[in-house]
Amino acid sequence: MVWSAAQYLKFEAERTRPARDLLAQVDTPADGLLYDLGCGPGNSTELIAKRFPGRTVAGIDSDEDMLAAARRRLPDIIFQKADLERWVPEAPAGLLYANAVFQWVPEHLNVLDRLMVGLSPGGTLAVQMPDNLDADSHMLMEEVARSPRWEKAFRDFAIRRAPLPPPSAYLETLGRTAARVDVWHTTYYHALDNAEAIVEWVRGTGLRPYLAHLPAEQRDAYRADYLESITAAFPAMADDRVLLPFKRLFVIAVKTR
Ligand SMILES: C[S@@+](CC[C@H](N)C(=O)[O-])C[C@H]1O[C@@H](n2cnc3c(N)ncnc32)[C@H](O)[C@@H]1O
Image (cartoon, rainbow, N blue to C red; front, side):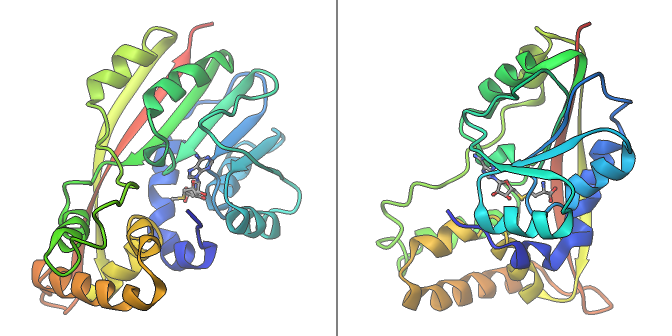
């Protein structure tokens, strides 16, 4: 599944806001490298480097286009290609920070549990994931895919994201090796220009697997049907803009010393 840094960065300010809110809850990290996992085009990596000057920061991602954009943006930082399903730090890390990536990693709670082992004593795991699969923006992708026109094309579609485990699961699992686990939700309300902008937003993330599954010549038609549903579900506000609610889950686990 290929990513596009340019498409993702169309909404850079809005997408980086939760990255800032997550980092705001990270205290001075313990000894070791500070890793940005699923670093994307380097927007979140830049925040970490600015927040902790003098510390060594490294970015990890599985996508070439994202890594190339990150290297252009931050030439002094090391970016490595790896799949987070299997990756472990070479030496105990001070910070494992992951903004908007683990929702794409199957069985991610087990992966996070394993990553706690890769932290220095007192090290921090900081994770944010969209928790919006029940939002209209996502439900409608699926509803259109299951409609009579598209049902056949999506019959063997396998890249559906699983809902996140409940907050208690993070507390229970990570609490086994953490001195402190902090879990919270925030719902952001993004005022976007129009319904088309909602489609553009998800085209950088959640809609990609749906479009990638279709032959190129069918993508515009699926996208048009999705836009029609989005237009009906998101009426314009008084200023003609539309409001996209976006719920996100945050988890901070600080390893015992
Ligand atoms: C939504 S972007 C997040 C970018 C950035 N961290 C931010 O805060 O905006 C998700 C990134 O996770 C990466 N990714 C997805 N699955 C991955 C995996 N299994 N291993 C490594 N990176 C992955 C994608 O390539 C993409 O760059």
